[in-house]
Length: 355
Image (cartoon, rainbow, N blue to C red; front, side, top):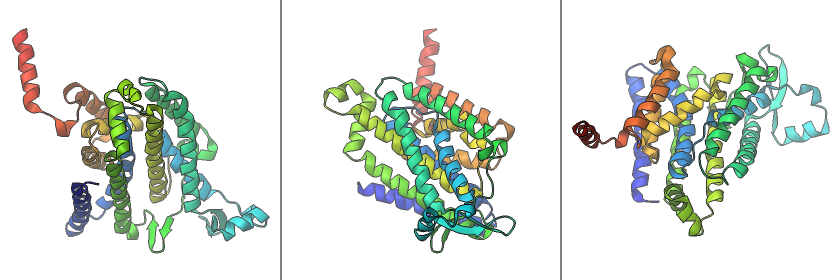
């Protein structure tokens, strides 16, 4: 890894700490709730940036993978298995700490899966589905992945919205806190606000470190060659299908993990998290930040998600992100942080001169 990468990660961590201290100094600690949620949404988006900017594939179903992570963990940690407590299998799972007892809303005792067990199941389920979609689709050229994931996202949204087991339109609530380690718990409790802010952004920093190492490696060079000229990469012996597939699966894992953590932080999940407009929003933010710019994508994700969560876009939230995507594609396809105003002016002047 290049030395400059370490500096950028340290700058990110220093910025995270500075923002927290600023909220403390200005008595705006409640902002940390939206900033924590912003971090989890950013985790999805930087994974999508790897897929779009480096592998050259567009997914319109990442909200669906986020929902798989969130809903799987929500179901497994809220289902009451007390009736099976006496069974041999339940006894083994309890000894392995995969099942755990806790109080329900009414003060009674219930037995459900530990959040760590639910998280592992959610990720494995996501990987299985991603491979099932990706294996046949990514052997083809063109934007077939975008169409396949659009259909997949629509199915997931319809299932969670129309299935009572998933809470239908109300979603699933009363999801318990997630004890990561002794003294570290993912929870939206006001007393744990600062801790959760650092957990979320620490996860983003770790993900950035992983992705930066990846794109600096042989894998990253292969992905860039695929994006630039897939036929030439194939001729050079690069297994383009495998690289695209594995990149797609990795990006869905980021989405699933974000879904698990945010669901436990919020204490629930609703069907809106699986909507197609959520996926369009993620694609729009990658486009704004720069298709092949992880740092640009992270910056724009932090800004736009925070503004959205604070309600600055009001009822026009989806329209704003749709409009942003159109404007970026028309005037700055490389992203707003790579926008060349002089080149744009010359282009406009040249067009006017030719008319």
